[in-house]
Image (cartoon, rainbow, N blue to C red; front, side):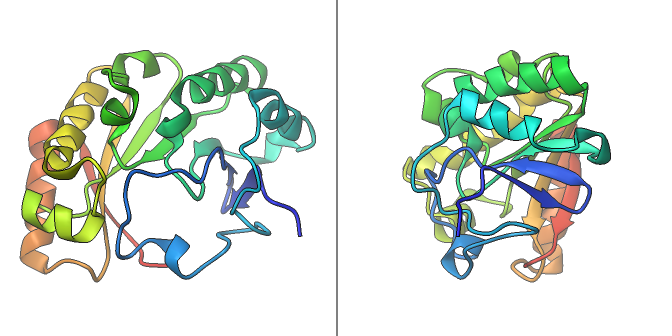
Length: 201
């Protein structure tokens, strides 16, 4: 069984760059699954190089996909510079919309404000808000960066709204109360982002 670098979910082609992640969410799919969508196994034996990812695109009929999504069994901003290089290739070669699904801790991971570098390359950034406050965030997301993580995630979202056409803050269905979901919707509205409740899979 091969490890998937690219895999299909609905009408998108997803890029599985890494299994590294600064979070250990209690509801993470990785706790119970080896795969998502039309994939074989998303646990990587080794991280693919940029050229290996580009080579995988050449094996696909890219005309049938509506978007390219950086999302796998890890946090894509762990390989931010490689992500940008691949995104630039996709834009130039296939002119497809690009989305990043992220925990929003890319600034902490990379030690700089990376949001401005997304300008012109990324069309949608979907950020896992997960909870409406810092206390619940630490309990549910368990980030390695500790207490500063929640505020850093929100700051990243704010920075993304300046350069990315669409920013989405999401939570997981069944993990929050209706009141907490309303609080999350208010946070998104204040930032200038959309709010989405994603299904628990």
